[in-house]
Image (cartoon, rainbow, N blue to C red):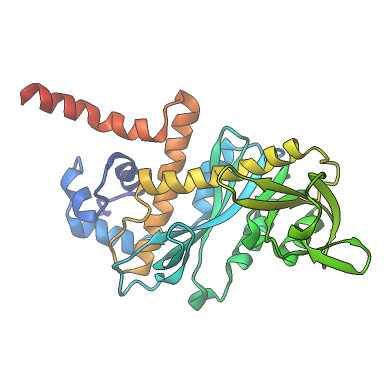
Length: 322
């Protein structure tokens, strides 16, 4: 029996090299060896790639004793999908409405310079019965077993449940999270009020009792467009608001990652209706991103310039002959 002509390395490199088309048909057209479209489809449908492979590729890129761990999810848009099991209607922060797509929950490590995904989960409650919070807790438990002791774990308000905060406290980890404006806090025992109703006129950082949790520091961020965010941490020595906010700004790294893996690795562009094919394609997109990030660290060449450097020689040759 002949081995499949498609391979993990070939598919990952194809995701990096392709500028727009990420289909198996396109790979069969550009493959350096003769390969049919069916060879790609069969490989995607039968390989059993798992998120553990992301850690195998990323472990040498991180310093587990420092840096930040960031959790968040993103929706892979699938507006025309009808028969893909992983696709379901869910709220998209990008579109600010319900859309059809696949939700991917990611755990990312950064030291302010590197942007390294170390784990991820696909949200599929019909199969495993797990919520996004369950997936994050699973990934944090795995991260602890792998030896991570982050400077902070960062998250938005959606993940700042009492259970999640207590989980990190039990691990001895410091966390920093956005809070919804109606989260109840107390400055006087037995009297609670929404965090938005604290006196923010003169005091930039308050030490308060977060209901059902314990003592935290909270601060208010007002953005140039008028948006307001409240952030909290269990690190009670962070009394300077500027330092407080600078740590939370690191959470933006996961937004950069989401943009990069969508624009540079084609993570949304798998057209198969098979669940295994979708899962394998998503895994390969993570590996492609790690390859781009590794080269960016080594050469300071952005993900986007790396992709354009592949097609620029062809463009120059075309223009010379035009």
